[in-house]
Image (tube, rainbow, N blue to C red; front, side, top):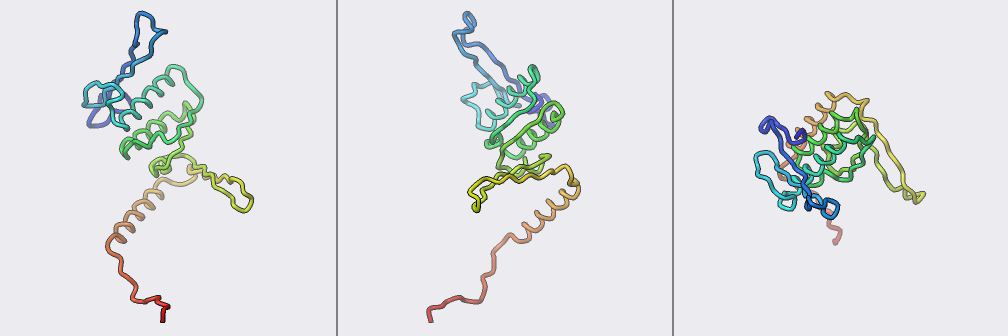
Length: 174
C-alpha cells in the first residue's frame, strides 16, 4: 500500500496471494492478484509493465518487512516505470534506507539524482581492463543541485528551436 499511496489515492492499491490448490498446497503454485489504485482486481498478466513492476516490488518489500535482508541489488527495476513512479520508488527506498542498503542499476536520471552515491564501471582501453569510478553525493548540497537543475532546464528551453546554419562553406572541390 505504501508504494502506491498518493494525495489523489490516499488508500493506495491492494494485492493478494492465493493458493492454486488449497487441498494440497505443495502440489500447486501461488496466484498473485493486484489492484492498482482506482482500478479493479486483475491477474498479473493483464497489468501494464509499470503496474507489474510496482506490484512485484510491493511483494518484495512486504516479504522484506516480514523477514528483513541486509541489502538489495535491483537491476533496472525502473525500466517500465514512468517518472512519477520512479520518484515514488526512490522516496520509498530512501525512507527505509536505515533498515537496509540498496544497490540499484538504472539508466534513468531520476535514480541518479535521488541517490546517495554513484558507482560507474568503464573500460580502460590502454590496459584492456575495467575501471571503477565512485562519487559520494552526500557531500553536495541539495539546494545547489536544485539551482543547477533549474539552470539546465532554462538553458535547454532557450536552446530549443531551429538552429541557424553557418554561412561558411567547406566545399573543397574547386
